[in-house]
Length: 338
Image 1 (cartoon, rainbow, N blue to C red):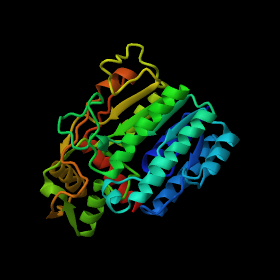
Image 2 (cartoon, rainbow, N blue to C red):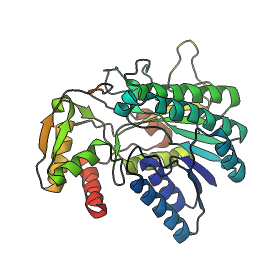
Image 3 (cartoon, rainbow, N blue to C red):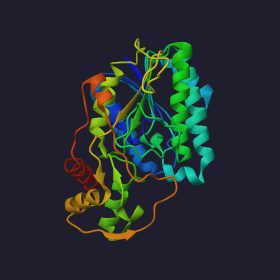
Image 4 (cartoon, rainbow, N blue to C red):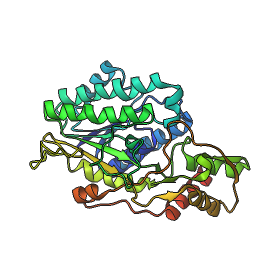
């Protein structure tokens, strides 16, 4: 079975590709290796995937391309004819979207439109695509549930992810394309993104520099460990979205549809106070952080928490890695890698 992954040199894409190779799936990987964060980290992820491919004798085909280029994308689909697609290529970051909106329009909207066209034209049997917990925006009704409205985004990044859900649903409805949107909740772990809090805090504490704590530490996040994310995605790849035969047109449920389209939260369902998260990092590093308390940043939300009952019902799995266990694994990796 061939699986195409966009954003394959990214944090989640790398871990998913590694798991697929270990389970004997041929992986076609696309990544433009942009400079949003340390390109050497992305290249090292790619190198590991190439080594694993050789070691396991399982094909891994890599293309340094952008999904915004429709011709390149069509060439790759035509050459390899994947059966399943996972779209993780996107311009990430809430704060970055405030100052660089055009990048989000191109990657997250134009690029995803190209992915949907290729999925339609090449008869893809299962599309998984990255949405985000940021779509819940100004909602303060915790925990967030897929049945809630997501019509009040507070960042362009969130708006593009909401748009992705609408675009995918349209293709599911028009062309019977099985598509599943994944609302990730603050993913962390080894090989993580350098722009995320865990990475930034760990680096600064080791170097003896202050860490910037937004909203003066009065925040909570539903931190979700990468292994739980990958376990969920591997199961979802084996269970494509189906039509909800009980869909109520008079009282529509946002998480399902008459079309083969589903939306799932993937979170730990155990929100953690930011200051407790920092304490875990300090514990692992055996060093206290120098703390700089600052105001909330534009586009941020104060709290997130996920209800993952629908995911559990669909695949029989709920993320459960504790913060203590997850942060320890990240710090061990960071100290070894750097």
